Amino acid sequence: MQHKTDYLVIGSGIAGLSFALKVAETKKVFLITKANEEESNTKYAQGGIAAVWHDKDSFEKHVQDTLVAGAGLCDEKIVRKVVTEGTQRVKELIELGTRFDKAQNGDYDLAKEGGHSEHRILHHKDITGYEIERALIEQVRKHPNINILDHHFAIDIITQHHLGELVTSKTKGITCYGAYVLNTKSQKIETVLAKVTVMATGGAGHVYATTTNPTIATGDGIAMVYRAKGHVKDMEFVQFHPTSLYNPNEHPSFLITEAIRGFGAVLKTLDGKEFMQKYDSRGSLAPRDIVARAIDNEMKIRGDDFVYLDCRHLDRKGFIEHFPNIYNKCMSLGIDPFMRMIPVVPAMHYLCGGIIVDENGKSTIDNLFAIGECACTGLHGANRLASNSLLEACVFAHSAAEHASSMIDSIQFKENIPNWNAEGTEQAEEMILITQSQKEVQQIMSNYVGIVRSNLRLKRAFDRLEILYKENEALYDKTIITPKLCELRNIICVGYLIIKHAMQRKESVGLHYMQQYKKTEVVE
Ligand code: FAD
Ligand code: SIN
Image (tube, rainbow, N blue to C red; front, side, top):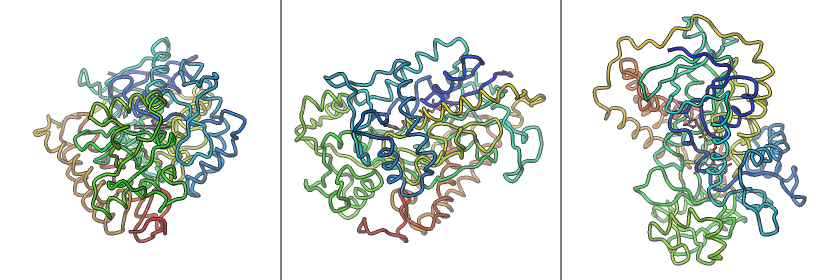
C-alpha cells in the first residue's frame, strides 16, 4: 500500500505533536507512532520545562547556566536561540491547554533543579509531561488535517538508495522521500511518500539495562538516519539521571525527580552520611553529571547497590502537594518518605547527541528534519541542563515548521519508489535469538560504557557489539520484519555510535568521563 502526504511526522511526543499542529493549517500531515498515541518519553517527564518567566531571572542567567552545564561544548548561538525564544513557546503550550501549577498569589509556581541559578521550572505537580502530552494530543485529535496512525512502526527512511542509486556519506544531495512503515495491526509494510519527513522519535534509554525511559526509547530515528548516511554527533554524551528509584525488579526504572532535591531532599550513603559536599560545593543540587558520578563512586567504594535520598525533614503537606505521584509510588512499595529514606540509583535518562541539525532543525539529508531528543542541535553540549529538553523540542518544532512551510511548495513527490521487498524472508524461528541479544547489548553498554569509562572497557564493548551486529544483520536479512527485530538492530547501531564517539574523544568532559583522563572531582 502506498500513501502520499505533504508531511510525514514520525513520533507523537512533544516534538512531533508540536510540529504537526504548526504545519497543519494549510497542509496534510501523517503522524505515525509505534505504540499508542501518548506513549513517549514526554509522557513521563516529571520536573517540568525551564523558561525565563519573572524579572529576577534573565535570559542571560539561563544562557550561562546552560553553557556551564554543557562544559564548554554547547553552541552558544543555539543556546541563545532556545532560551530567548523559549518563553514564547511555553506561552503557546499554555494557550493549547497545558495547565502549569500556580502559587497562591496566582503567579506560576517555579521550581528549581540542579545547575539552575534561579527558580524557572514550570511544572504540573510531578507529572508535567503527562499534562503536556494530554493537551497536545487533544488538539491533534481535533485537527482535520492531521491523520494520527498509532501502532505504525517506521523501519527506514526512503532515499535514492531504494531506487538502486549509489549514495555514500560523501555524496552531496541525499534526499528523503518518505519512509517504509510497518502497520503492526495488519502486519503489512506500507510505503509513505512525503514531501517533507520529520524525525521526532525521541531517546534511546533502552540501549542500556537500566533506564528511566519507557520501552519505546530504542533510538530508532538516529539509527534510521545513520543507515541512510545522515550525520550524527555527540553520541558519547549519555546522561544518567542520579536518582531513579532502586527497585531491582522494576523495568523501566521509576524516576525520582530532581525537583525533590530542589525542594530540600539530601543524598546520603547507607550509613546516613551526607557525601555530596565532598564532590561539589552545590551539594545534592550540583549538575547531574557530577551527582551521578559521585553516587557511582560512593557505591563502588562502599560496595553498595544504591544510596539514599533523605526527605524526612521536608514539609509533608507541601511535599505531597508537589509530588503526589512520587509519594504514592513510594507508599505503594511500603516506603513512607517521612519515616524512611528513599533508595535511589543512577539510570540512563537522556541522550544529548543525535542527528545533526541546523538552526531550523534540518538534517544533513534533504527534505528530512529532526527535532526533539533524537536531534543534536548544539544546545546541550557535553551535558544537558535539567528541564531544557522539553523546551528545546518546542523551540525546534517551531523553527522546523516555519522553515519546512517555506520550502514545501517547491518539493515534488518522487515517482517510481518500489514497495518493500520481503522476498526470501520467513518467520523468526526463535524469539530468544532476539530477546537474548537485546539483553546482551544492554549489559555490554551498562557494564562497559556507563558513567565511568576506560579505553579497555570501550574496546571490549566494541568487540562484543561487533559480534552481535554481524549475527543480527544475518538474522535481519532472512527474517520477516517485526518491531522487536528492528529495535534490536537500532539499539546495536546506537550502541556502536556511542562507543565509537566515546573512543574518539580523548578527554573527560561533561558526561563523558574516562579513567585515563580523570579530573580531580571524583576520587577513585
Ligand atoms: P518522545 O516524547 O520520546 O516521543 C518519541 C515518539 O516517537 C514516541 O511517540 C514513540 O513511540 C515514537 N517512535 C519512536 N520510534 C519510532 C518508530 N520507529 N516508528 C514510529 N514511532 C516511533 N525533560 C525535561 O525537559 N523536563 C523534565 O522534567 C523531564 N523529565 C523526564 C522524566 C523521564 C522519566 C524521562 C524519561 C525523560 C524526562 N525528560 C525531561 C526528557 C524529555 O521527556 C524528553 O527528552 C522529551 O520528552 C523528548 O520528546 P520527543 O518528542 O523528542 O520524544
Ligand atoms: C527530573 O524531573 O529530574 C528530570 C528533569 C529532566 O530530565 O530534565
